[in-house]
Each structure stands twice: as C-alpha cells, then as structure tokens.
Length: 285
Ligand code: CO8
Image (cartoon, rainbow, N blue to C red; front, side, top):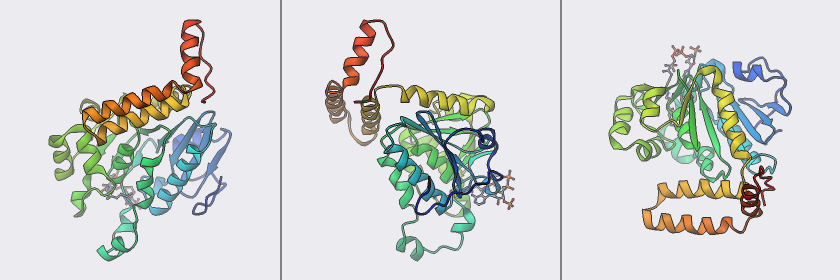
C-alpha cells in the first residue's frame, strides 16, 4: 500500500521489536514512519520511529490517517489496532519538528488537521499501549475507542513543562473521561501515571502483561470484527454520542440506532443463530 504522502520502504531493519516479530505476516507494508499489516479481519498500525520513541511528526500523522481511511473503506477489515514498541507507544509530538514554529506558522497551516480526521473513522480503533504514552502520544491513545495497556505503560501530558499545553484534544477528552480533578492534576503538573492508576481512573480498559499486550489487543479486535458490522458501527456512534449530548437526546438517538439494527440481515442472523443454538454467520449487511 502506498499513499500520496507516504512512500513504502522495503527494509524492516528499523522496525520496532513487536513489528520485527511479525515480519513474516502476510500483507505487511513498511511506510516511512509506520508499519501496516492486515491480520485477517484486523488492521494493525505499528508506529515505527524507535530512535525518537515514536515521536509524532507530520509524516507519521499523514500515514496513520491515510491508513485508517483505507482500513475504514475496506470491507475485509472490521477493527483496527494502533500500537508502538514495548518501550514507547509514543513520547509525544516531535519536539524537534515543533521547536522553531511560531504562532504565525501554526495559524497559517493547520498542522493537526490529519489528527482531527480520527473522529470520522467509523470502525473501532484500539490503542495497544506499552511504555511511554506522553503528550500527543497519550492524546492519540485517547482518540482511539479504547486503550489496552501493558502493566509498564506510563501516561502523561507533560506539555506544560515545555511551555505549552495539549493540542490534539487531550484536555477535552481526558476531562470527559476522568473528570476535572485528575485531568487538572495531570495537565497542570505534567506528572506521569502508571497503568494501574490509569485503569483505576477509567483511562484504560484493560491492563495486561507486556508480553501479552499485542495478542490481547488483536484478540479484542478480532472479536469486534466478528460481530454484525453495521451494529458495531452504530454501537460506536451511540457511545460517542453520549460524549456530545445530554441524557434524553442521547437515549433517543440510541433508540433510533437500535431500531435501525433491525433493518440489518445481521440482526435476523444473530437472533436466529441464538434460537437454533449455533454460531452466527454475519454477512455484514
Ligand atoms: N520528540 C522528539 N524526540 C524525542 C521525544 C519527542 N517527544 N521524546 C523522546 N525523544 C528522543 C530523545 O530526544 C532521544 O533522542 P536521542 O537518542 O537522539 O538523544 C530519544 O528519543 C530517547 O529519549 P531519552 O534519551 O530522553 O529517553 P529516556 O528514557 O531518558 O526518557 C522520556 C524518556 C521520559 C519519554 C523523555 O524522552 C521525554 O521526556 N520525552 C519528551 C516527552 C514530552 O515532553 N512529550 C510531549 C511533547 S509535546 C506534545 O506532545 C504536544 C502535543 C500537542 C500536539 C500533538 C500533535 C501530534
């Protein structure tokens, strides 16, 4: 797979450890800053800038978004996993790339435009986080639908120490996710929390041993990809709607989506399979 902004490279030499372990997997493409794989019905994106702890530069953002859009449009893919290396999911925006920018540069060109596209991805995206998830790296994980973390994962928004603040939604998504007190604490002090505190506060869905992280995330993604795809899309939309609305319109919206699920073949198949005591075979129609 190639993209307009992303050129494929053939050498796996610079790949992160997890990615190296899967070098023989079919449909694997190394772009400049990420590795893209299709694992049956699951798309896997591995951030691959090991020298800078997967710092997020503009090229990486373009490659991730282009790949997510391609997975979203691909009927064979039902869910996506984004991961990094055992040492770092991503240690934030690339500070070297940002350091010399001025307000005028940031106003003139929207350098976050690619990341803003994440919310239009309809298929579920899981962040599999090991090691550092800092700054923009944590914000990227928060943009995913849920986070599975290894027990050595570290989360933080240390932007304040660089004289700035979160810039791709961290202050908004974190506050909605865990409330004002801990969000203020993390954003104003810049301190880092471990996987257990992240789990306790609701940032993280599951914590697993580092060696099980990728497998656990892929299994969750395969489980999702095995469900009735239109229902999965609607369920994701329903949960996201809760973040945007108050209870009554939220419940009404959910009700319309629930009714719409009865227009899918998958609803008929899922219920017929239950009654017949067999496994459902969803055709995603
Ligand atoms: N950008 C660029 N390079 C980085 C970054 C980064 N964010 N993080 C680490 N690196 C580089 C280091 O410079 C170092 O390079 P070199 O080997 O050439 O010296 C290499 O990665 C390894 O890092 P360390 O030697 O520092 O490794 P340590 O284990 O000692 O420390 C830390 C690891 C604690 C993660 C440390 O590297 C660190 O503090 N990194 C910066 C974390 C940070 O401040 N992140 C926030 C960045 S700002 C941000 O994210 C803005 C968000 C809003 C926009 C988002 C758009 C994507």
